[in-house]
Length: 127
Image 1: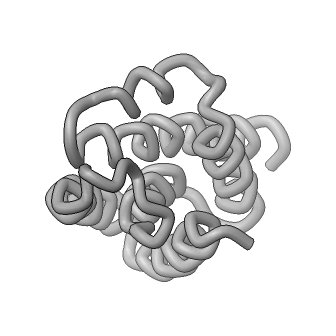
Image 2: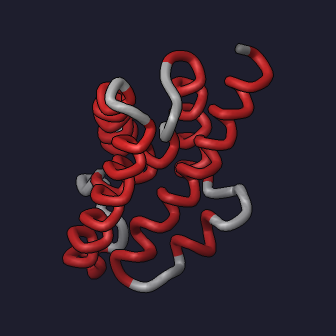
């Protein structure tokens, strides 16, 4: 399992725990971790998007699980990771081309929104 997947899985567990407080706690965590990811990853832009830096994946995963739990959160995890890895969905590649820490983090945030949409759609249709 890749380091990004491990980071996303840990963020999923933390987000599910925060979900017990409320969706707003997950949203606050997404904002805080997203801001930290931009700041932290900006220190490593000369390395591109180093695989050992996974706070950007954590930020995307927090976005992907806002208001979700259970199976919908698991669906969002898989859609988020596939979207982040393959970068074939609209907006992900463009976000990655932003300068500095913004680009390192933004592709994960955009992928997180795809995961969030999939999780909410699954919840609405199946559950």
